[in-house]
Image 1 (tube, rainbow, N blue to C red):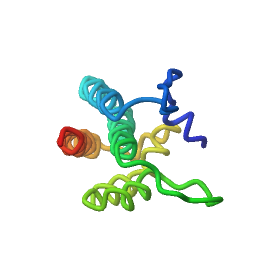
Image 2 (image 1 turned 180 degrees about the vertical axis):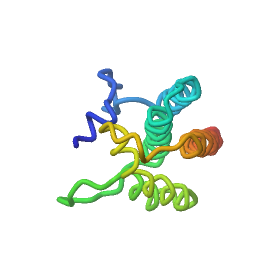
Image 3 (image 1 turned 90 degrees about the horizontal axis):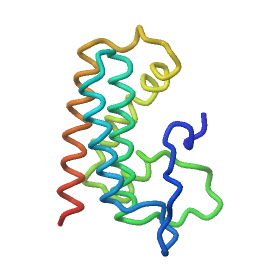
Length: 138
């Protein structure tokens, strides 16, 4: 599945060629978390919270820059986050471990996501976004 389908990018760009600022990505993450909290469906809450965490990771990556990878194959945001922001390595591992569940839930396999798993993902994504927000402000 294409990352642009899972994680669509805004159409506007700045003079530096960036799609959006770290603050704007973080605001999108927080908006997604607010949506996740309102959604009664556990599988949709899980997916929305996971994608919000992915936006928060993108905010940190936008802040730290992208490592030179030459002709390397595409790498997940969680792998990049681990290398560019080692202080978030455990968070990256946590969310990377949930990526298969997120993909399945997004594909309609709802039996994998319990109410508790959705609540946990929302809570963890919110805590992660808050930590990224603190890192951006410093």
